[in-house]
Length: 387
Ligand code: PMP
Ligand code: GLN
Image (cartoon, rainbow, N blue to C red; front, side, top):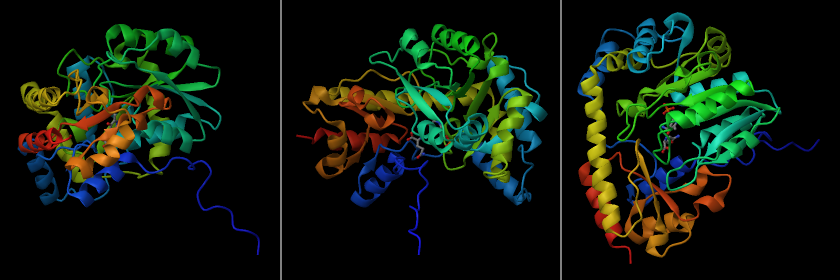
């Protein structure tokens, strides 16, 4: 018998297990408060939840069109016009996906050849390098540096080579909460145009900005035809388990991304697509109120951590705060997070999992504050017991 080759494809070697699932399992197993994986422990807007129930009751339960139901594609196009002044044809420029994750996967698989390079900012959302590897491409990471998480334009320029194909920008940013400024996005746009790169923007936290303003990269000159703009309903409406996302781009780019997407899930979540269309049509004030509600949680948790001696700069957006545990006399965030459930019954994420250059994150821990006030208060009470 010839020796059987290894089961796992060499492209997937080294990907390991997503830290989020592992840390949620650890929280479950130890009865710890889970400030690891980013999901709310409270419900989203009642009218959006009700729209999902209604869609099921009305019989919207079979396959949707491959590009998504027309109502949602129209709602996404209306949303892009209303918030960013971007004009899109819902029929040819919007593709509904199984969460932002599938949109990123389909984009990378559709647009990258083996040997291509993808430029990322680190810390990065862990799916980007994993999906890049699954496409047979490689990535280069440009550092966002604390305390303001800015990047060096020359470092970005040096990361671009003749093999570069995509440049991925996540704004508002996980895990730091950074909101890229207009000046920073102009640097990114100029380099994309100069090197004929396609930009992929992950904007899933677009409606959770507390300080500053979210700007869509595709609204900058020269970028509409070379940007795939990705977002999803999970964070905006506190429904992370629904996995309804979308990609917006030129008709040619959407055709390309759909070529991959159609053989990943083909299509998904018909009743939830109806509900998200209803959500995107909510008035501005209602959507802003969801952000304001999260801001209260951010402030409660960040103030509490500061009182406990953590070094905390409140994040400008999103679900997470990154703290430096050096101030607590701790110097190994990975060991700290591993021991934390046993020490006090709380789970956090060592930020180094979002880095190639792990030395940049030795002391950094990410905490999710998208939790009920009671959960956050209990977590702070437990963290106070750390001796
Ligand atoms: N991008 C970022 C930056 C995220 O934090 C997440 C996590 N939820 C996703 C994408 C995935 O989004 P979805 O659940 O819609 O696939
Ligand atoms: N985006 C979530 C986070 O950063 C996790 C999503 C996932 O588990 N893949 O915590």
